[in-house]
Image (cartoon, rainbow, N blue to C red; front, side, top):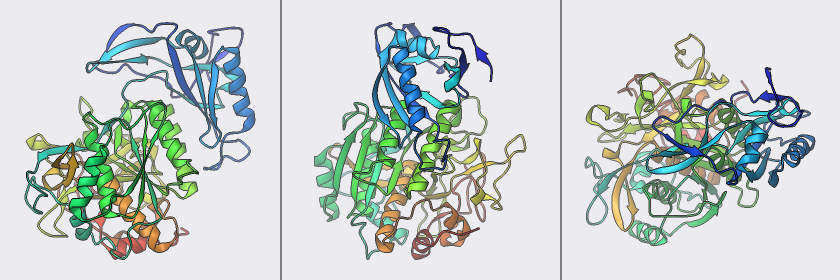
Length: 509
């Protein structure tokens, strides 16, 4: 570990591994951040060294060490979450600069401003093995919603099978053979949202038109975020809620609104995964960004949080991206989307529906200016045990990486989902629709089985025939074929066999 000179006081400093932050392409530096401007950060800690298993929180001694460091630097400890291994600190930009050895500046990007940093974070040398990440110094927009809206469908609901007109979620539930003897009653599904909001009148009108009751919805604000409709992200919020509520009408939906930053996203996830009051068994995520846009410290901190979810029996589903095998990264190359690429997350790819079940193909409309399902091989995460012997191709350097997606479902907006947005029925798609679809199926499975599905990776990969394989199409870098592939993973839901696999006992090998 290279030790740097002190930035404040006599204590030696060390670079926090994985903390290097590159400039945001296209952002323009405006000025140095006002030294008096308030800054909030989340310091993520290692697991307790005496018991570093997932689900085990931080060591009280580590928390005390960070608190002492904060006091010495003139920073206020605003909250401590031992389960999520996080300590929130607040102080003026000048104190944060000295505490973490960073230069903070204000930037303009896309018509908005944000505080950011470039380079590495430094901490006292005695804390470098204690601290996993420092999140919040840089507030650039971190993730994007993986949703695409076609437009209004006119009077009433659209007709199924009409290109560009879409399906009701209830029709897609029948398409995929969802169980009809359960409604998800007693199940709580968490949805993570990094912007936008919903209008109650849209929910009321939508479910009334479907002949269903309006699900119980609980909005939860994290780090000052709230249900705030009126922006483009509303489509994401509404899509997630209406798909889950229509396919599993008996569930309780808890929407965690958090700021769109690495800190906000982390704290939103931590609030859901470690919420022992509402206790969601399922988490649906429809936001993400290509792996190169994340720091390694953030990837590892989030991944540890998802490992906690596995240990707690919480199922986490995430969209794998809507930009094909490049994930929209300028300059080409093959990239995957995070948090979908975490080995503890169920990565959700996308298809285009045919005329009847069994005729789906890979969603790819890139040649006509549309989107395509993401998928490929992670550059950061190693090949998990459950994917051994499933044909995941090697990385360009010959090493083995985590393959995404794991599963898939309808995502092409041309055969998308009819939702209610701002008083109008519209058709939407994207892999963001797949995460709530699988979340709804899991809620139905949980109710019927009476137990948590938890992480289904081992069960699904042990019984791939429990899904309907999609073998036609490509996403610009990978081609569909029998078995797992980097377009639609193992395939799409296949009714009762999928439900049986989800609720089966965990394989021992």
